[in-house]
Length: 327
Image 1: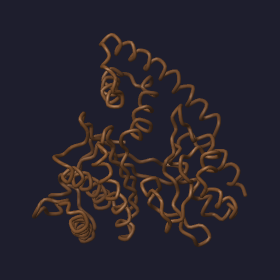
Image 2: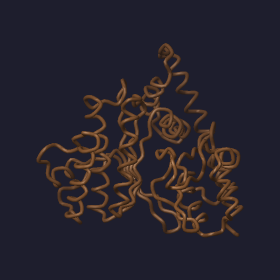
Image 3: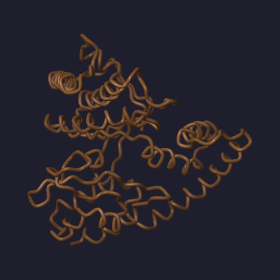
Image 4: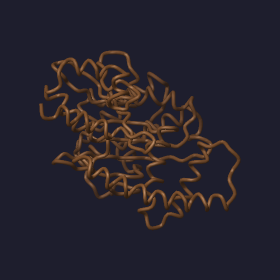
């Protein structure tokens, strides 16, 4: 993984015509549908890509399968704001599109997970962003690209980003800066009166100590419990569960049960149905963009998997996989 990733001006751009087409189509689409100006007037492809930067770019590899993850994080204490609602939404969309264009244009890769994360996005901005992300995922699929764009914000950020960082902070040599930055973020979720410096230091020592013990025990337990210890629960769902579902090993009755919210909650720990038909009505932000084909029918797989102490879906997912992978 590389943090603060930027492109080099010496790199050669591939597929310039296709990238120009992506730029043109996204510009026209978001302007016509929402009135958003994604790119500044007269911005060239080279200018757009040269401005690209990403907080973290990494590759996860398992069984010969690699997945690219590109993450941008924005921390605005008063809530995400780049200068008004329209400008903020347009800026986030541009960041996501530009990252996808860089991955395709410089690496020749058509598939990646592109995440924009922020601990606090006000409802009006978030509600405006969500349909844009859905449209963006669908546009990329229509152009033959499998980029999965996601927004992680507010409670999702707390549960899937901030808490896991605090839990493993004991394995990081210098935790002071990490803790204080995390504490700043925690105050966004806690509206109570700010704590004194003494209380902050006490919490710091407690969290760092407990996090080290917990993370070591958790990793040891995870290694002993399943054979996918190197994968996060979301990756297990996207790679292993998807393969099993598409293989034909899962019967029609189970496919039907996976479309039930209650069954998915009881047996997989999900708050949403594990599967929905791609042509049905559902919350698209809760499902992976790339469809699953089961017996000729297109489905979408739920993306809301968590692996934190208060909400750990991993054991249930592993049990499900063991039940069906050998059939």
